[in-house]
Length: 136
Image 1 (cartoon, rainbow, N blue to C red):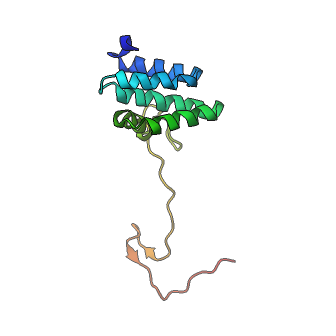
Image 2 (cartoon, helix red, strand yellow; image 1 turned 135 degrees about the vertical axis):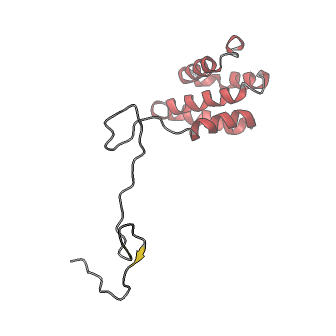
Image 3 (cartoon, helix red, strand yellow; image 1 turned 180 degrees about the vertical axis):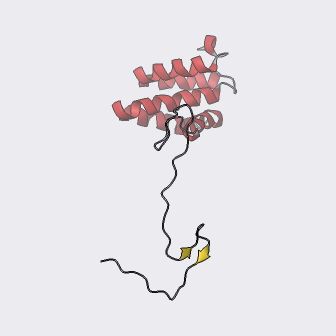
């Protein structure tokens, strides 16, 4: 792993692959974290999160072990990398009328009808004494 410390992407990919295939190596990861410089530790956290996400469907016990390992490790840099991967926005295409897949548009929420507001922009108050239509 020390050979890969200058290339964080390769380090994360390799560590993720190792943990997915053999989650019992978490004790070795603890040793790696203790010996790793501070700027590498967030990458280790990202790799742990990626390994957990890959294990959730196939090996839920392994995913739980990885999650518990990160929690018990109590290393702020590793936890920061772990959480950063969780908070990254998704790059998957959204549902909607997006014909050009190279441009990702957010999904618009459905327009809710508000009987108390009227007008083109729903910014005018409706008559509060008007009878309300009852559902049948």
